[in-house]
Image (cartoon, rainbow, N blue to C red; front, side, top):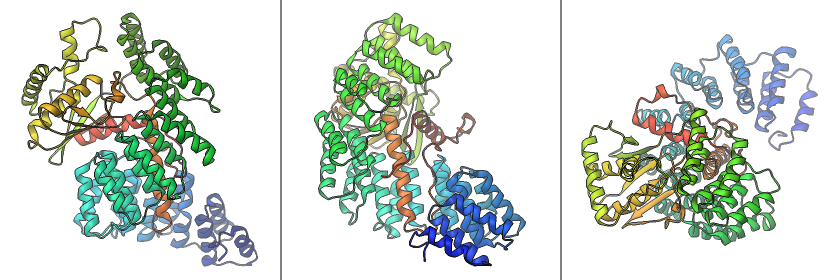
Length: 616
């Protein structure tokens, strides 16, 4: 009773007065401490039970205590408990095997978890959920999806938490067709009324490029929580719909929904991508003075990005100098990005010097600084920056673009000649370039190498990966259908203009997702209004908006787990998501186009800072 009321102190006093507690009482004590987040204390009580008390433990004891090492990220303790389960002959019990699988999944020991999963003759639904969630949270998205499909083949009805995990995987992989398949399963299983499933659907459609469908689902939801509102607002930010994001934020405030730090981060991000400077400033002021939030460095970075993109570089620098917290790479990176857009080489030098002090190995910063000098036709300085990159053996993240045709992923790199239809693709590209020149298209070569002829510069930028993907999409898809591509780096100015012209000539709508946001092209116009393309952006992320988006994604996953724990007793305890995101891929793992696409995406995420998990 005391544990249910969170009166842990009273519960401990009552327990201490019992002269010889039996196994059931010890189990109750351990379970109560775990449920009230007293993880270290629960391990001490378990030790007292086994060593000092000499009381015999059972499988219920181990199941009760296992969440503690998962929450504390103590792999060694988890392995010790596993050994006790093996020695006592209890490991074969499905409930205990599932608990161990869950612990190993949360501790990123996915191979150990899989061994337990495969070795269990009876796999309860919770066991499937643990494995799928484990694969999804460490980045092995393809394995999570494969296991979910295997689960469906066995006609095992998933829990809502399983569906949210797989929808998160679809969102990370930008797998819209697979996400739609899961949506059909949700309809057939009558899960749409579940607030967490519906919120995950909104998030998935927004991140996969279907912002209209995300809003339709949002509007049809009978119940919405703060996560739902945040998902929709951040989705608008990704698509550059700043006005809609601000309007929804206003409606959220009027509805008296409890706001969080991520709410403000989402709307500030949306403002920065739409040039809504005054609106963004009002939101930031309201955050501090009306709602009493203390801004984190990510909020400050958003404000610097907002001012820098709008050309208010002096105001952005003044804002940085007045910050009560030490500006990090995300802040100086935002300023440097603005310097690239507005060709301010003096302030760019200041920002880059700060970035080099904090992260001398940041190749993105060197590339951006080199591009700034090239745009200013200061080729000697640009060459000296590139020489530093070579001398330090720094490598730029390889650019790649993914396009899904008939549910089959195709990945292209720059100057790619590996595709089976390469001849048709390059012929189509040549034909497009001819038609576009007649329509007035001019190749943007300002940041190409200065020591080559203009004709050679055109050849250098003509074969960027997104151009090849679009050419293939025009060949392989039905006339009139929408083309969707996903690139791991930010789209460059030349490719942005190229895509605008292609959308007009081909009369096709093209949706392009780069490392920063979505671009919707139709009839020669982009949804961004060319606002974010005032300079060349063909460089790796340097901890500007990428870190902000990673922060939003991390908190989306963390808070969904928190909410789900309230209603799903079988859900594994929440581990610290931030700081534990790590790629499970190496070059030798890139056996398929899908795996390669995931690796590119994961490189773009793991090379930037991640905001610690916070209340959403």
